[in-house]
Image 1 (cartoon, rainbow, N blue to C red):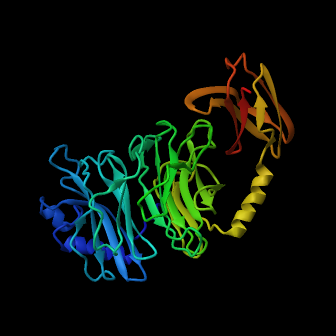
Image 2: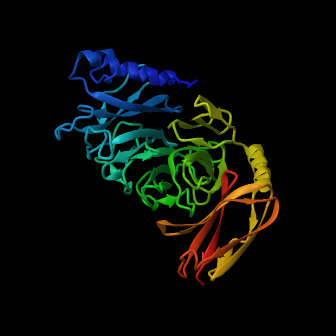
Image 3: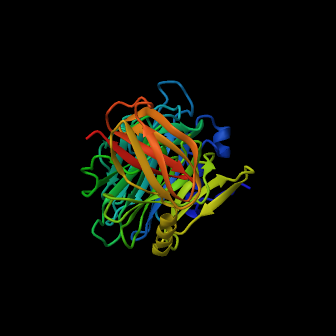
Length: 417
């Protein structure tokens, strides 16, 4: 049975304030009765515990799904004294979007609080990844938003013909660690190909004045899709956790896993953990990271009977230690690099029987693919795979060989020199 989630009480209070005011959401009774009321989309809130202030952002459509150029989408902000009253909405963007709820719409504004009461907001703009900030708890803002970098292919996308998105997710390090105050924004886009979505990260150490170049979080050389990330910062350690959907383990790209990328050094290096036990067909966009008594990834997936369920795991040092032990028990032992030759004999050890699919790709060409073996049965212990590069039609060059087996993959490099 599909599990439905309730908004937090404070968000419900904010929605009630919207309904009572002159900017009610289109789904309210008031909006149904008054066609002039503008549509509000996906309000998000954050709480400044030190100053007891709620900060909220949302997208407003002049007329949802309108094709008229005069109708635009804009980003609004409001703050509240613990949810009792809300300030008049303030527009944060200078670059408006259309009302078609697609790549040319301004979408997904998300607020977060900094260590000194700063308020940071990011969203997807037709011009790229947009950022706004207030250094005085939401009283005053930049004259116009900053565009940090492009969102290649836009924020709206499809996976397995199901609508999804790569909308930005913003957070700030509130720990007492080395990177306190660092602002992080992650998102996914199609920079490396429409069928090769990836998760990216940028960060700023000067309250949003300057940003790093995009960091590729989800790099895998087999050109599979990673998308729709969410993010948390551990308030004690400052560790960065990014959760996302990942198709790297299925050669045909039909099944999906949930991966967690963990950085202990401010986003420069990540370790990766598959948090789901069984792969599934992507059919739900729900993905969440909670910090309730530890970092807890949550997601919704359907079982073989197409019944939906909520899944949750706890990530801590003990769980990670257990993961490493389990991973070592499943991993394939293989040499990681080979020189290009007419015939390459790949020897490997595997811990369990498996059916292996071997595929050769090029690191910088997502469309290039040669299947060397399909569902080849191998047995526990020593095995070998012969790669005849001439028969495969491979010219001398640099390649990646990916071995898919038991809902995982291992890759090796074939180098020209």
